[in-house]
Length: 326
Ligand code: ES4
Ligand code: ZN
Image 1 (spheres, helix red, strand yellow):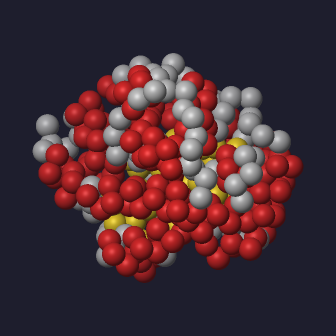
Image 2: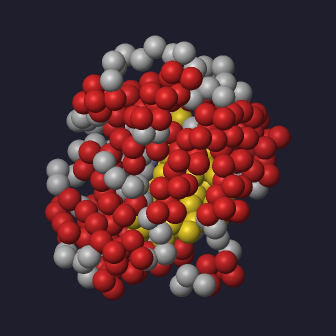
């Protein structure tokens, strides 16, 4: 086994982390108390016991409920700052963070509160921790496209703080094509594009995300391995896949990590990266994800270094900014 300190010592970029998914149970309880919110669970331990999932939807139900404790700009600051400190400890030097506006606006929290709180922490992270960052606003795919349009409209005053648009939440039955028009609008507004695809959903959704939405990157993309032609397209165009091994294990996308497609994808020449997704819920941050796949798939130091390199190559940093990491 490759030692943990080798993985820790690799400078890494994180390209797939939901800020609401970094809400640790301890902070969740602290924020509930601060905001005088009653929780269904009496203790941190009781809450943690509920973190047992058979599929994506089991997780999403608990994740959206947890997000209810986030109310003020300071709450979003504290959440993001806690993640950045963890990122610093683990050798992350650049991070591209998702947030879900509709999870908050649908319960009366203004988009400006969310964006400003997160962004203030990202600024402090840059100054005090030396971590660069970008923000990605995700549309919830279980909601109607009109709601995504409204979200895009609401976001325009914060255009300068948001780099890209993404698509997440319940995948099955909510194909990328449902959001074609709003993605076209987002692109016209100058946003870069990403989408979750082929996590629980079929390889068809990956094809739609690429050919129809014209995304720059695929989040997860596990199902691509089932289609040789799709693999060839991903390889030829070097479209990054942001894999999340511990997430896949927790949500039963793979039965065990020994069956994870990461190593096969790497050897086929795909631009695969390792990421934490929702680390507070899936049992580990980025290093634990590298360690878990490294142990399960017997990755070499060269392969691990390639994955870390890929994380910069697949990022939204400019070629000049990437240079020092490649
Ligand atoms: C998510 Cl693991 C996952 N899949 C889809 N949407 C999400 N939102 C937060 N985590
Ligand atoms: Zn995700």
